[in-house]
Each structure stands twice: as C-alpha cells, then as structure tokens.
Length: 409
Image (spheres, one colour):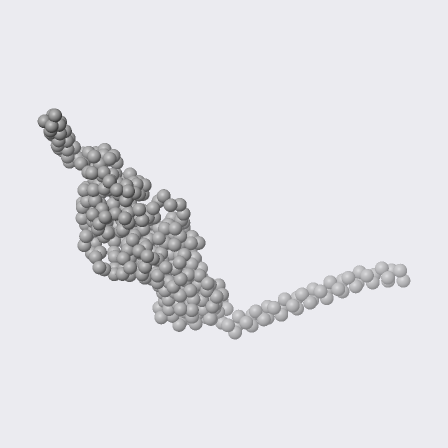
C-alpha cells in the first residue's frame, strides 16, 4: 500500500514539475498567467485567522492589476508574524493581478493571492525625510523585487502611509512637467466616508511638519477628501497639481499652517485672509509665506494682507490687471519682507491717486486726503440735491393747492 502511495506522490510531483516548467516558459514568452489561488506557483495558503484577514483585506483594496505606493499595513494585518509583514514595514510598491504572475517579492500569504511586492530598501531607513519620485504606471512596467529612493516609481495610486513618529518631511514628486494622474486611496476602501489622510502614525504620534506634493493631479482630492493633512503640518506645497479649489474639509485638523505654496495651479481666489482686519478665523491665520504665483487670480488679493503674520507674498504671473490699492494696503506691502507681482500695463492710468513703487512692483495708490474729500463732497452734493428736490416738490404741491382757491375768489 505504501508503495502505491509513493508512486502516486511521485507521479503528482513529476506532473507538477512539468507544469511549472511549461508555465515558466509561457510566462517568459507572454508575461501573463491566470492564477486565482496561488496553488499554480506552489504557495502554501493562509493557515491562521490573521493571515486570512490579511488576504481578505489585500484582495478588497486592490483593483485588478493596480499598483499602489504604500507604507505599513491596515489594522487587519497588525497581528501578523514578522515574516508576513510586507517588506518588513519599509515603503513598497504592491500589486495584485489576476493575469500576471507574482514576482515573489511578497510574503507567501500575499503571493498566494497573486500579489507582487517591490521593496524600497534604500533611502528610507532612520530618516526624517522621505521623498518619492513617481510616474503614472504603464501596462508594460517591470516589477522587480527591489528599488531605491533614487528610482522613479511607476504607480496607479498612493495609499495612506503608516509612517514612523520620527518622520518630519513627506515629499511626493511626479515625474515630468505635467500633473501625473495618480490617485490617493485610503487604508481600507471598504470603510465609507471622505476621510483620506495622506499619512498616519501608530498611536496618533504623527509629527510630520512638511508635506510637499508636486506634479500630481489632485483636482478631485482637494475638493472631496477631508482631513488629508497631518494636524502637525506647518509647511505645505501643492505645486502644479491641477487645483481649481478646495472643499470645506480638506484642511480639517490643520491649525498652524505657516508656509503655503499653491503655485502653478488654476486658483481664482487666494483661499487665505479675511475681508476684515484682525478677524481671521480659518486655517490660514498663522501664514507667514504665501505663494500664489502662476494661477488665475483676476483681482488684487487685498484680503491676504489682513493676515497679521504675513511676511512674504508672491502673486506674479496671474491675470491681475487692476493695481489700484488703498494707502493702507500699500503700507502693508511695503512692510513685507518679500513681495512679487506683475507690473501694470504701460497704458494704465491712475485717476485719483499716484503711482508708487514697493518691492520693484508698481501700484496706483489712492490719495487718502483726496479720497476723503471726494467722499465728503459727494455726500454733501447728494444732500443738497435731495433738499432742492424736496423744495421743488413742496413748491409744486403748494401751487397746485392754491390755484383752485384763486379761481374761486
């Protein structure tokens, strides 16, 4: 009986080796293979509840053939053994595909569900600054088991990152000059809602102060996502990100933003400041530096100058054509450490004011004395006109009433 079993086992092993050889050859020639359970590549399936939950989470959070830039894991994976942690917790590229063979860079439980992992081994250990250079993934992208911080990473989306509490700066740069169509995705897509943080830390110990995102299309994210930034953010750059505006809750939790760079977008309003001096009540009250260069502003953003802490303002390369400002606004501009704007058209005129220069920029500054005089005389003229009109009306009414009496007499 044992001999029969041994023969059967030998036959199955031989068949498996032959199948594996043919699959390997097919993979080399065509680059694709249907593998829904992982058994075709000889991977042992999950054996613990934690592993099963991890597989369920992974399958639910990846579209077919989607590549995510990710750091850390969802709560369903926290009870995994160290050997099952993807890339030992360092940043990585992760993919799940129903058609392509896994690259065997993941722990076995994820390879078993057709996952591939590329570990970013160099450049992210014990560092206060993480920088990722990314590009929109193409279908022909290779999937090595390891890359470094110097490589450009082909991705479809960026998942909420679980970062160490020591991280201070998170920088994501899209390759090229045009915004890359790369999505941001939450840690668990099964949970409804709009909350979509870019980064979190264990035990809410995040200490990121600088977030820089450049050349990434964030049009929908800034309008729909909430609580995107760590509450500790003081320095934010969203440059060349196809921004047209912000939703009500994008900046939720941020209260001490000091440096804001929104340059090279399509914003029509400054999103900072207040129409009334000393009454700022939004997330931008502490701003010291505001960069709105190369946007679509059409009017001079005087509201920004009501921010008490403002020291630098950059508004060059917009669509501003009217540089008529009040004397008080001009004084604030003069007091700034740095200021840049376009110059008025050479044919521009300055009625009721004088041309003055500050920080190499030219303005039509209204003469406060003349303005008050004009305002006062205008008011008096209106009063005189109104009184004269009343007198004429009264005389007319009196004449009309007296005429019948004269006729009777």
